[in-house]
Length: 152
Image (tube, rainbow, N blue to C red):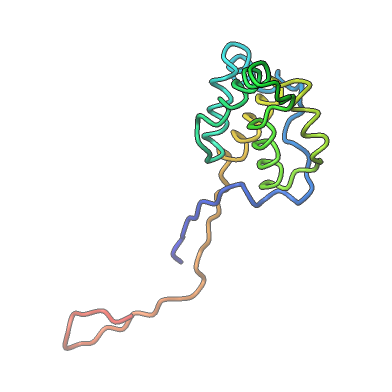
């Protein structure tokens, strides 16, 4: 019996329509993410963007939104990058929710939203499943008296 070990990502193991891995205000579940978001939310936002496979500088659009509003009078109340990443993560991992809830979450508590996204991606990306498969097919060895070669 020959054992084979395969490593699978957690990505597809949760059932469709699951809730977020942690709540919006569950900062005590991961103190490191909470402190990171509290002390340097723009850095956390850029980290989340990178973990999701997007450009690290994408959340800087959210920082520029108030400048666009004041300079040109274009109202951008919803942080565009934060909302886009939240919707993308929810869609990719099939998390329950709606666009309306995503907009409300992105507007009401920006820091908590980024922390929740960070916790979710850490959970999804760093929880591999280990699967060990053993072959039950027997291997027969033939020995020929004239040669020393082994035939499978």
